Image (cartoon, rainbow, N blue to C red):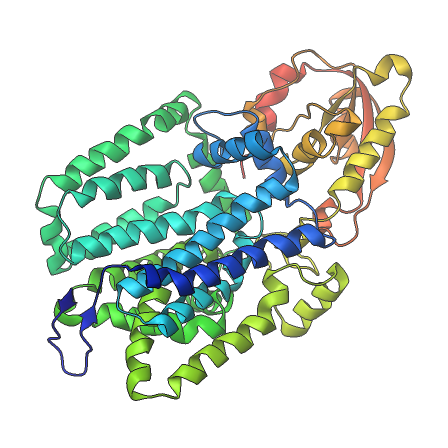
Length: 523
């Protein structure tokens, strides 16, 4: 299918059905990406990431919702754990597979837009060369699943713009329902797409009953999760509000734009800029709504002033695919592009690879990142300022924490040892004890952080407990006996976790169950 050009100097947009050959180059890049995302994180000195510890806990407590995310991610993880066990390799296998599929889908979309093998390879390589993609595909989280869903949603939207039957809206809606059950932030994509359609002639796509029937389908799919939110007092809204007010680092408009360039990688800049221009200048403005989606998303990020460049990651594979098609056409008249574009991308990818992939020891990674000036602070507070990037620092020290707590427990008198419970300040410590400490006899830890709060206080009033963190004065207001047992230290970890006191407390003065609601921490 060819869309005739209506603007001088604008190449025709040649879209074509995918053939068997179209899978070869994207498939090869996808395999390379899968190995790159998977292997270094399992063979180096880095362990589980803080969020992975929490997601394992969520996967073992399936529900229709959690404070900080919808239910589908933990369900996917639970399926993977049922097949392969709850090892770190299983978590990383899931994340890297979604990353590889995103690389594959990007190359295939480039082929759909008319790119040859060179353009398909460039588009696929751009995903691999994106530092923030290297991070999110390197450990399990909902962020690893989201880019593939965004890519698929935009592909369906593209087909609708190119004349696919209106019933394709039902496929879009079903996938949107899956995406909403995976990560709430897909709402921003839906809003941006709606605005882009309304302000362009493509608004005609909204005139049939199909998009509205699709919206009803997506709402029906989301209904159980919304019911859970209502039953629990809309905890996710409280979480997002607190994160915006107290957690995420505020940033100005120029900082938002600079972070997009930095976190997506300067090497990918020519590819996605070419893709943006390709979509904007497509003949008859056919694909302009997809370019507007990017613009609206960027404006949302600027207005929100939030330092979360990964919020737009899902849109870049679409731009990379379009860029592969655009640069394929450019290279036909300017052969030097065939060498310059891959060389530019390759140099930057290699230069920034140790920042996104755990290739070096923590001390070398810290020195390398500081030499490049690439150790950004993503969250507020001095405790969140680290020599290592946070996505590496929060993979260190968890085994030592388990050892420290186990040693304190084992030193208790035998009559207390079997009844002691552990209170942790964050889902990271609680999850570490439950998952990494399972062979040391830890089956349950308690925290008031995010969904751990909803999982409730201990069923019985504890007579003796181990408390990680907190201040002596506060503990003495709750317990009759407070003694410092140990100072936990972790080399290379986030500062807020280093030199953290661990206490033994006895004889509570208040009812833990009655006071539990006062200690809620959604952030």
